[in-house]
Length: 225
Image (cartoon, rainbow, N blue to C red):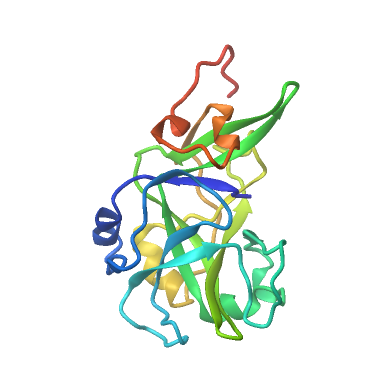
């Protein structure tokens, strides 16, 4: 799964790398090293606000936690969807066909079960490049209120990650972005030897905490590899 991630690098830098228009100046995003469900995050898409197809690639702020157009407000709006079955689930299948996006991240957090409790680990690309997580998004309108929201697709964890958690985000390479957004990409598991990880402070457990120190490694007595 993916329940927290970090996004500290400049949005303009990411936009250039992803060949995307940046966020509007009317919707700025403040860097965060503890992005949590219900927060608003830049999503890169080529689908317009009214589901127009093949509009110029651009960023829009969307809330993390999917609310389909037909759904009622719920405290259980999903932050993750299994990539293997999303195309057939009523909650996700329309978005799978019509509203795809990617969310940039510096890295993401997963929690490993230990005798002392769950310990957070930070995961990131070994070359420290941007992680582009595949997402599905929806537009919801009701009685004058509107919301664009998304869910992160997950897949079986590769060798780099599975010791910490059995699932991981679906990662899209920059050269795959066009085919993912236009619906032609066949998703495959992330190859081994791409992701690095290390334990971090349990301060990340509190969504009120933020700052670069949350993704800084902490000392460990034993290296489990």
